[in-house]
Length: 138
Image 1: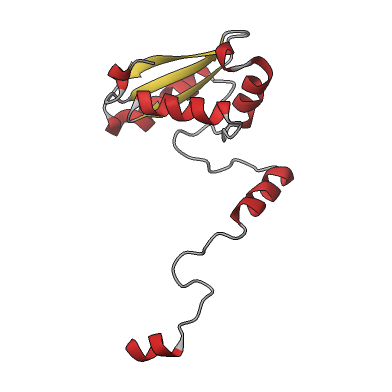
Image 2: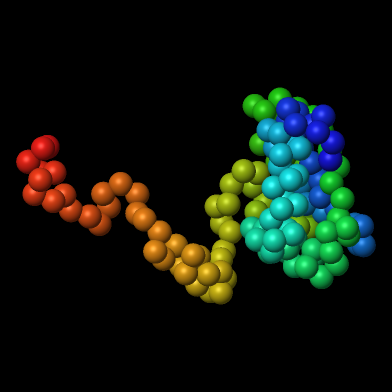
């Protein structure tokens, strides 16, 4: 994808060059979004398991990205939903644009998420107590 799409928002399609199956997505910056997809796929870290397995098996050169529609960012989710409903993309796990509600994680994924989160600091004071000096200052 060309750098000319860096400040362009719209709907994109990632297609298999092998069997024509595809993914529909939307982005405020099409250029940046494609580079995130590519980076994650090349590093085996993509959140879409179907797409990751396909690229692991066939390689990154077995997919292509194309712009389906350029639109204003306020219209992105509406237009993405239109294409998901109309084209029925194979690689889209979630059938609702911009929403992962209803996506069921496998037990393996849940375990990986648990391991990944262990040792990370919690947000704010959750699970912590102020020491006496801090209490006095408060």
